Image (cartoon, rainbow, N blue to C red; front, side):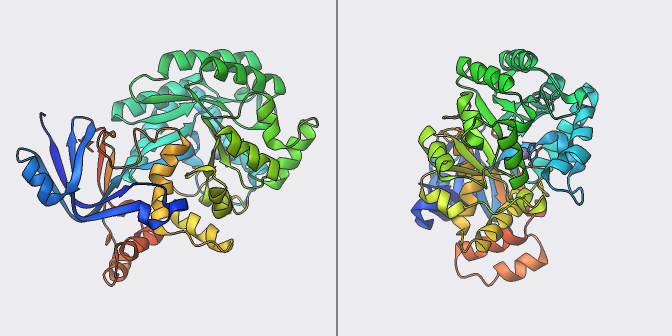
Length: 428
Ligand code: GUN
Ligand code: ZN
């Protein structure tokens, strides 16, 4: 083992899913250590044991920091970086007024490259080491994103957003172009280094049935790709889908008929669902992604975390930047907690942290590689200062256990709490 690094701190790992199994599925080793060798986690345990076992390793002592897997953001739109926190609209008007004009600018490869770099640097500063991002309709926006991620060593998921109606002409492709341009991008990027391609119809209203069919066929031909889209976000959107697809039994059925449900399908929002939709989501092995800052910011509704978790859905957490109002998965966990409170559900800190790491990785079918501290996993880690601001420090100082010490950082923390970031084994 060449240049191994031993990181010391309070090490958080998961042996199961605290959302359904309870907080005992999370473990904190208070005087713990994680050994990184090359791009992998080579060992973890107590600091004393690992120091004895690996005397040659270079020591990085993070003091009382929490050492965790890096955050995984399971749904975001990097082209919307510059319009985050835009005022006063609900989904459909927000798309027309802010989003589509901004996404038009990504036909310029230099602009796309500049925003992709800025966005990924913002994410790393916030402790997010993996993101699943939509790009714009322009293939160059996908090249820019994957190239910026490769330059940073980041594992990312991304795809060209496909739209062939109900969007400005400059952002529309066709069924054939969506298929062919996505296929070329799959050949160029999918499985190269740490890149995963996601076939990305934006949502049912901006695709014709022909486009969804073409993308369903493409996915069938490339089943190791993911498929990401939006589902059941706002009531007006659902009415619109009903009018556009009168034959469909419900919103999900539009995707189901096109072959766009199943393992590796990732549905953003999934707030307003029928019983049939919930059943098919679960039975098909599809994933749901909760985007709480977006759902409150655009006024979409309250995700049923406890109900969906209890029925065995595969759920991850995400910012949905720039419908979401933050780049921070800490802020996103806080919003998930608040949304659950409004539904009478109290999410434990262990469940929140799991949703932002291992749960989001599982939603993206990457749980065997990222999202947890375990031997053999890829070395994407963060060190989190649990007393990063005076306001947080005065609260965590009187905590009686680990979760009470962590919860103020979940509720009040931001990028100032991120004391260290390791991507693919290298400190940033
Ligand atoms: N539905 C379709 N497109 C979008 C988008 O860009 N953001 C959100 N929040 N919902 C969408
Ligand atoms: Zn979205």
